[in-house]
Every structure is written in C-alpha cells, then in structure tokens.
Image 1 (spheres, rainbow, N blue to C red):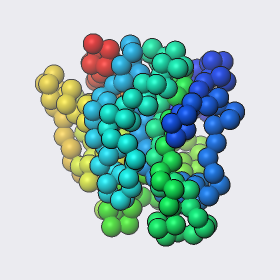
Image 2 (image 1 turned 180 degrees about the vertical axis):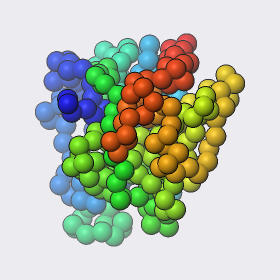
Image 3 (image 1 turned 90 degrees about the horizontal axis):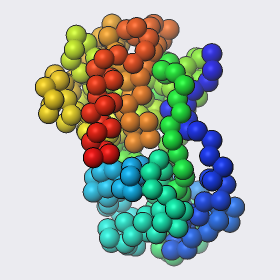
Image 4 (image 1 turned 30 degrees about the vertical axis):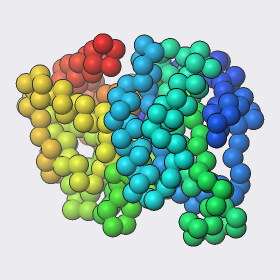
Length: 298
C-alpha cells in the first residue's frame, strides 16, 4: 500500500525559488541558513507555529500569535519583535513570494546563536533567530491514514509540557518511527494514564453513534484546528465530548479523523490493524470538513 504522510502535498516547482525570511532578510531557498551554533540546531531550544493561507488571509492568525507569544514567554524567550512586527514579517514574505492561497508558513523562533556549544541559555547572547519558511502547499493525501499505537507518550507538564509547540520533537519523531516500523502512517499516542490522546503530529478524534469524542486536552498539543472543530460541533448541534476514553472505545468507533493546520480534517481508516467504520471518511467527518472549509474561506 502507498506510503502516506499527514503533511503530504502536491509537488510544486515554484517552491524551488521561494524566498525565506531569516532575521529580517529575504533569501533564496538555497541561501537561507542559520549558524551551526544556533540554539535551535544544537538543542531544539525554540518555538514555532504553522499557518495556512486561504484567499489572501492567514487562518486564525490571532490564535496563532497568542500561542506563539505564550509559548515564548513560557520558555523565557524574547522574540525580539512585537506581535505586529511578526505579522508584518509574515506578510512581507507572503507578498514577496506572490502567494494568495494554498500556502503554508512555518514560523520559527530560537534562542539564537550561542557563544559556546553548551546548554545554558545565558550562552545565547546575540538575540533570537527568526525564520519564516513559506511554500506553495496543497494537501494531497491519497487515502485515509492507518495508525498504530506506540509506547511513546505525550507526558506530564513537569517533563516537557505537550502544549508547547517546541523545536524539541524527538519524542514525537520516535513515535512516528515506531508507527512506520509497524506498517502504519502515523503513531497513536496514549497519555500517562493509558487513555487515547493524540498522534505524533496531529490531534485525534473519534465518532461514536453520532457523537464526536476527543481527549481531555490535558496531555495533547494545544491545537487551534482541534478547538475550531470542537467549536463547530457545538455551534451546529453535533454532540462533542472532551473525555478520557480507551483503545476499546477507539477500535469500536464509527469514524476517526485527525486535525491539524496543514490537513484540516484527515480521515483514519485503520488503527492497529482494525478497520474503523467503513474505512473511509464518514458522514460526520465530511460534514465537519465542509463546515471548516466554510469557516476558513468566508
């Protein structure tokens, strides 16, 4: 069966010539570089946001800026720009690349270049590194995803709070590798109590008897698309529950789907070798897709 990634996009030759924003300067893709002494490269010391462009507008921009600045404050990182400055940098990059829709931006902020190759934050004395990678990007996922449950967990907030969109992604990468070794596309991760939580890259939902279930949110990424789906359910009289539930509940679901900025709502066909529902996007998933599309394009 064809390998599938949750961030699989159509090939677009224009991406070979995109300009990338690096600390205030737009550089051709081949020339956009950061130092080997950068905190992000050395230690994963930084935070990031992924944003999507629809009809000339960044979807849920205020929520993304809120999350970025909250995360930066949490790790005591000075972004070096006010909110308006970050938005202006996004717009400068967008306009310079002639992008109006079907574009994806990855906005990254690290603690910057270190004076010596060690951990202490005080060694980062030159200010932050800010990078915006922007690509023409239309999702192209040819089939529903297959998930495999893995031993890796999204853990307690006193280790590394899973709500942080941090550069330190090794735990999730190891989960993804474990899922691929099991013949799946993405990893289904449990929380510290053994309840179904999230995947290595996206938030996770199931549908049972017309009701939408997702985790409590205590141990998963603070997904903006996740919250929009919950809000859409409430507005449109679709029963929705943020609750603890087990793999038994999951295997017996009528539908399952992932949410994320890139893929919006991506259906799941199989979990741990068990077909979910009819193995295709179900009626609730399709309805939420339509409602979400209306929300981001209106």
